[in-house]
Length: 158
Image (tube, rainbow, N blue to C red; front, side, top):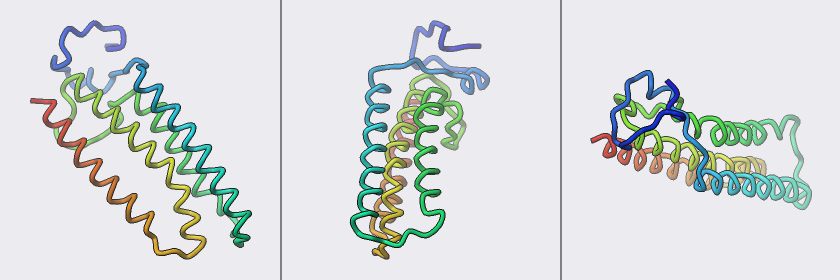
């Protein structure tokens, strides 16, 4: 059943497991803003990455750009595919049972994609033999975000 075309009277209306997996969310102003932020973030990160490599005259090993390119593609996939199909986001537990939970899962996917867009900066840190501060901060923010959104999704199901 396509929930994009289906009229839902109540955001807390229970969904069957099959409906929950096949939810397709429409475009909203919020999703457009997140997409613009992602595009700007990716452009700025790649300009910083390429410019700092040239400025610092760092020796770039073969295959250096593979990891930043993969994380950038993962951020794009998360933003443009998973955020509109929140059934693909597995947050554990019994799963999302209503539309409000599905929207929260999509919002979490968008926030996570913005964080992933910053990961190519980690390559610079590793190349210049810095302390790994960015990696630790990213890990902490990702864990805190996952916990906060898990709690919000759980509360929306009550």
